[in-house]
Image 1 (cartoon, one colour):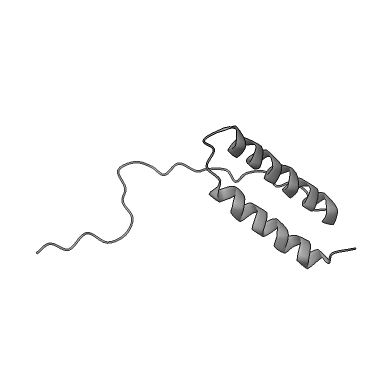
Image 2 (cartoon, rainbow, N blue to C red):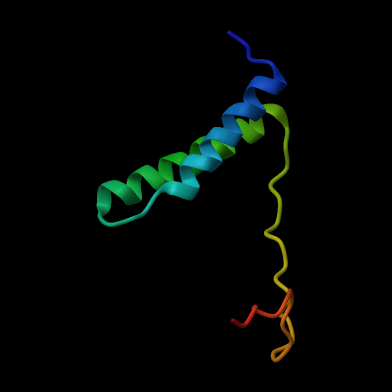
Length: 73
């Protein structure tokens, strides 16, 4: 059985959503997290997607606010 690239990409999205929801409280949760990460890697290898590096965080200067001032009554 073969899956289309679009189907595998959808499965990767679903696994990533599940990964973002997992909260590790015990060994079972840790195993589930590791299993989901392995699953994601296997799916990415299946369609030849390279692993992306995490985005770089940029610190905003302190003291500057964005947006409107709060309305006063």
